[in-house]
Image 1 (tube, rainbow, N blue to C red):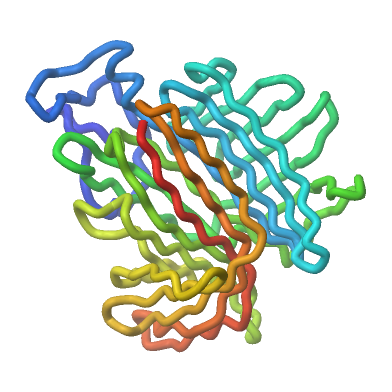
Image 2 (cartoon, helix red, strand yellow):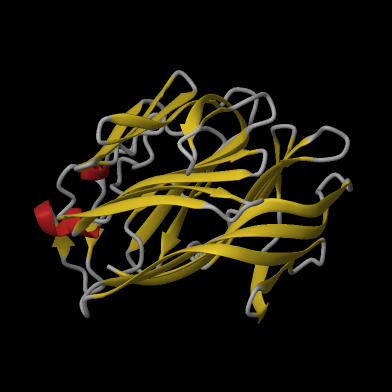
Length: 331
């Protein structure tokens, strides 16, 4: 199944299966005034990014590769919740030079290259391979296993002429290692959990969203994953869901509300989800070039509260590690 149909338009909704391919060249993109765009004008409108978060004991790790048409971007960080130590690197390229984000869902090979950094993300046979180097030395090497966890595969219209496809999975097993701020090699273990976010599409030229993600083991030994968002899929449905031992359960629309400087409330419209998010270290970017720009905040957070699942099960979050994101973009 191709995400783009024979009529030149994507398949919308929560998809029961992951598309075999995304042939963007078959998509008929028109301006709000009905003019069809092709070539480089169409390519500049197309956005693609891949993000992976790994939770290992008291360490939170994030790595991303993004191609937003007029620029390429890559970043990696590790944060120690116990000591507040941060190791962070990022770089940008003009017109996405040295950046390849392969959006194909089942088999893909992506990279970001800008001296001294080299990030690679490959996907094959249900395994995500991730490697990050700096000055040729490995800083992160991970194999992430997707088997045994149901996928979120969603395509929704954006505005009058765009769409966004996102594929997400949480609570995935990880093998490998990373280098912390003290230059110690730390190996992942059977309790390490990872989340994957692969997103592409013709997003609104000016957009904003909130996003909350976390993985944890509860007191009964269950793998719990959570993905909540507001904004990016405003035209149709939502991408909110809860994973319990790999089983995906939908969640109603949610409201993100800032209570004070370091505390947010996230609650669902059906009152079955009520969370309090306490933010800590923030990964921050602020770019204003008038015609294009971005303000990006991703906070390392502690999350507490309750969720009543679709099956009636009560999920309790007791100051679990997670991340909260707020992003404004004009691209």
